[in-house]
Length: 451
Ligand code: PLP
Image 1 (cartoon, rainbow, N blue to C red):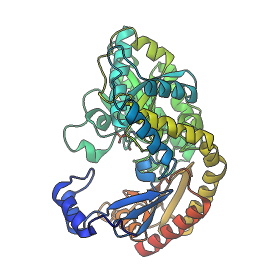
Image 2: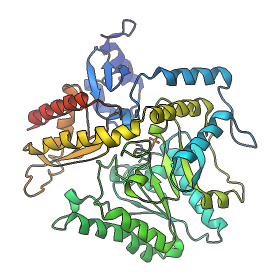
Image 3: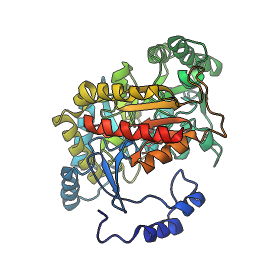
Image 4: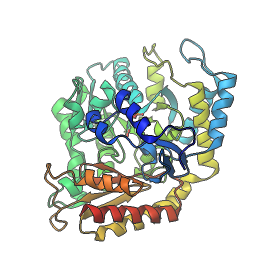
């Protein structure tokens, strides 16, 4: 049912089109059809302004890990707003939510990742990382180590720093990205780019591009390598098993800092608290956001190892955000972590939901339009193809197959995203198995309509 006090959809859409500039959208094109206006949500389901109910296959933007409608988080926010709605953590002050959350994250994070620098988002946290790793090397007496290596088609945010670390060609085409001192190597996308190589040989070859780039630049000039354990916005690109161990060998050998961008893979998405644990890698810094608060409040940060944090502590780090460690966001994040932990949501992903999704999602591979289906934890993708035997990709002009499929999903009340011709999902971690079945039914219907 539509909310009784909500104006009619057409009226809302007219206001939206007249005044609201949407991110990552051709706003001009949106005007004609109008945005779908989401008014409420519960569990894994969204309700729009016409009263239609959608399955949210994307957990918002990969963030609503505990699902919608958890009143405990609203209560935590209200309590904190009454007690201390805002204070900063600059200039020799701290407050209970920020320090408690930092300590909790140090407990959850692997190894000696014991220190947290807070930000308002994943993009801001990655901007922090750029400055922190350069400052680290300057304090170590190696100021030439400034270049950061990242990956084409990686996504690390939308600020000048985050967008530069990211390797999104469409973003780089606008507004002066990337900033200097950031270079990109290729992604480990076997299905799309692996040709005749086996996945493992291809994974090794792509990892070794990191070594080649380090040698080309001179190791004495390289500060860090940043990557998502599984590329999310790039199309849920799951690397071959050979990839991460080789990357770890290379960063160890050349003494390069490793930044794992865990904005999507953190907080249970891959069936461990952090994606780095799923792949057995040992980052010096992890970027976090999204699932940290399940999206109920905007908050992000960098979890930093002892060595880097202790070095940074030697001098004033001239960097920070008004909302670093915002008390209301931190209180909500703490409540979210309590729920994730007490309800054993991460363990359920690993033991129940991920194997179930892998099997259900894999069942779509018999569809004539589907080239491969892959999943890890509760992230999954499939490639649309005109010819699955040849692993053919749609030509760019026809590449709107993904867009068309996404539109049919939407018409079938399923939120599934497309990245080019890859269809992707990352539902709330609490999704029940019968909701997974329903998601697959709707996805198959949309694929049939796309044919
Ligand atoms: N890093 C990764 C891996 C992401 O997926 C995102 C957002 O999707 C970001 C960073 C940027 O986070 P935010 O949108 O909170 O700035």
